[in-house]
Length: 146
Image 1 (cartoon, rainbow, N blue to C red):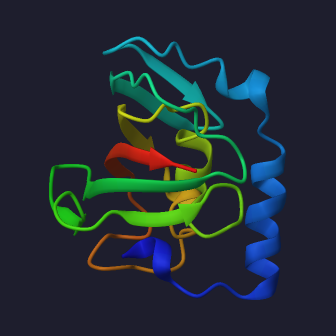
Image 2: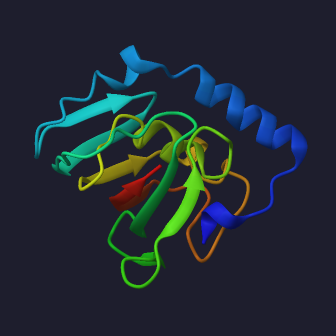
Image 3: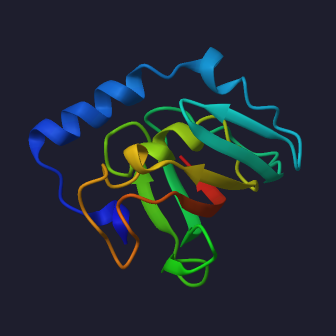
């Protein structure tokens, strides 16, 4: 999975710094209405279903199921079934597009994230068959937060 790649200390610090720039007022720009889009820092966010549970905030441990595709529908990452993927939001553990696109999401919700190349792998590396210079589309279900 893309989010499990080891990060160099400098790259992790860069991700954390970028995540810290996104605050409550930034992610509130997303409408949180099913089917309506918001664009935050270049990430197009569509709430497919708005959850009613805890809100994803920086420092929260999130449990998600996800499917990653390149534009055109070719799946390169599929974690929709089985155990959830677990990470701490805002700690540089996932691609920047997730750090931006999942803030403010609520448990029980589903989001589509359209992520530009600069917020995916950094435009320099192909991962799991996903081109580094293409947009990635993720469908994410937030199942639990602590």
